[in-house]
Amino acid sequence: MFLWHILSHNVIPLCLMISLGALMERKFKLDIRTFSKLIFYLFTPVMLFKMLYESRLSAGILLQIVGFIIFFLLVLYAIVDGVARLRGLSGGMRSAMRNSVLFYNSANYAIPLNQLVFAGNPFTMSVQLIVMVFQSVLPHTYGVYAVNAHKSNTREIMKTILGMPAIYVIPVALIMNGFQIPVPKPIYEPITYISNGYVALSLLTLGVQLAQMHWRIDQLWDVLISNALRLIAGPLIGFGIVMAMGLEGLLAQALVLSCAVPTSLSSVLLSVEFDNEPEFAGQAVFASTVFSIITVTIVIYCLRFIP
Image (cartoon, rainbow, N blue to C red; front, side):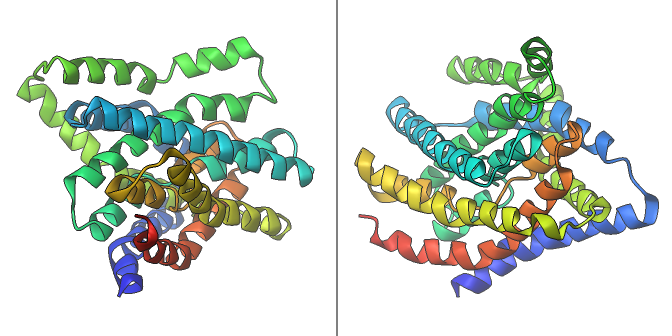
């Protein structure tokens, strides 16, 4: 039952949208850099604003979620960086490996998954939205730095990061949320339209990238290692952290589930935008999405053991 729900509600719709992007690329030879710029500079910041502006969580719960996410990412970073060093990866490939594990699909995969597992519970959905916000901001800050650190100086990297509109949207959205400042309807309707298009454009972009990609057998082991760290080590680390923090119930279950999803499209978009191992990034996203059919099903089963 779980397997069929995951297939029908998550994997099959994702694959259909990705396939459409690949077909469009085969037919029309699209410019993927235009797609990536639309996502980085328009669709992501607008989507972030809408999610943060509409979010409703108590300060205490919010602090617990933020604490968990920071702890989780630090532990995961230490592990994946250690593995990359053992593999002898350097420069752009090391940052691509880290991004493929640290950036996970917290939006168009995790949100419908959360709705399925928790039957549309508004509390668990709010938890997932906070995770999604972090996962949307991280590629625009650390991610931009990581893919440029080996080929640019700090000043140029900071200029690139400061050019990302997402980092300015966050404080504006939080302030307007906190003070309940209304957004005029003529402005909010376009925000809604653009936000709703984020998932579709991201998946189509991945399809375009996969169609343009030259599959490399020599990167197979690195792709499999990336997938194992993302899909197996990720939820295990998440489970350990919720136990260490003493988190229980739906909050703990939602956080562990958020750690189990496959690699994010952001790793592909960064690789394309800054020309940093796009073939590896695309293969990691594709393979992790396929393998997640098995691993996510196991994680869902194990959630019942969280008190």
